[in-house]
Length: 115
Image 1 (cartoon, one colour):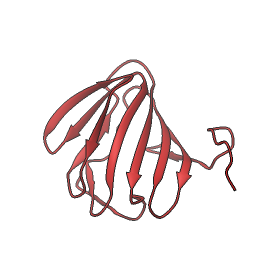
Image 2 (cartoon, one colour):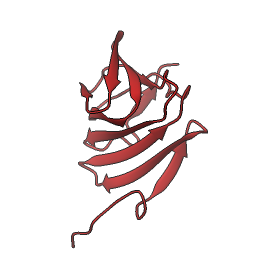
Image 3 (cartoon, rainbow, N blue to C red):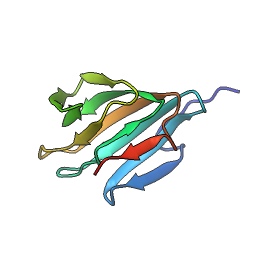
């Protein structure tokens, strides 16, 4: 059965001590997460063995390092990360970043941290 989802009615979790995530879609083949990343927050550099990801910025500006190349992503922009590619997202701005992280297959349990 289909249902309308939002951050108000889906599973919430915290990461990095200060960041929030909401599972908008969570199946073995697809993960769509809305995340909130406050200024100064970042994830550890890592890669996924099988999952391919797409980061799409809804609000704010994020820095996404993909295999050593640093991209600045503004609201309305995104970038794809292939499987087995080291990457790290940071919020180096003074605004909160709101974004979607789309993974196929789902990336949970498929992560190797590099730091």
